[in-house]
Figure 1 (cartoon, one colour):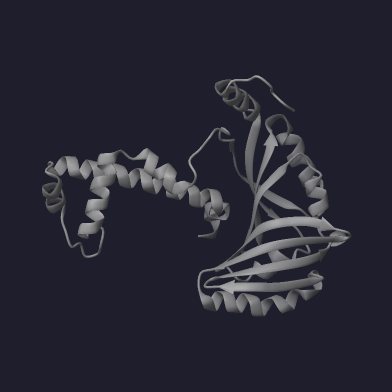
Figure 2 (figure 1 turned 90 degrees about the horizontal axis):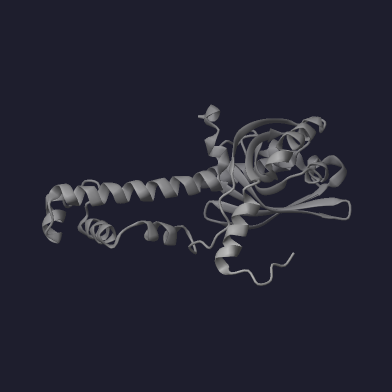
Length: 257
């Protein structure tokens, strides 16, 4: 669909109207005969992030990124995957780096549920497998949410729990990355005080500089200096935590703590 002759502000308004009907749904899901679910069940210190899932002939192929909390956890997980070779046609460890490994898997399409789930009114944006469960984030039109979830319930063996439903953020022009977003949210004074405090050792433990030292460096009152630092910390932490939640939705499953 083309929208010829629209001004930039009109296009943005049109984008807002289009996405207002979209919702992002996050679910915790389990289904039988799943290689990734079974291999992570007894390995709570690793997570699998699905980078790509696609169908080739009668096979489902997936590229996965394995993230481990320690090298020992990564090693044990890889060693344990041989026990589940009956659930896969082939699984290749194509590379390891620090606490991550990259996996390419081939699976019999008839034994998976991906064809069925991809036929529903939903567009998956992220799939993370952790501790024997899959955590899906997907987009769906708000008037199709009930129908989609009802149809998901009808897939044999599938169990799921809704973790959250929220509006999709507006598809407007945004900063290049999270650092740009954080930098844009801070004033020049806040950034200067933050960098000065960091260089002086204020954030180290034990601290090499106190609040009085930082305030004196900039010629401002202690209360003003504290205000700049606290407000900056709040903005930075909030954005980083939001990003972690967005990238790793399984961490919102507090039942596993």
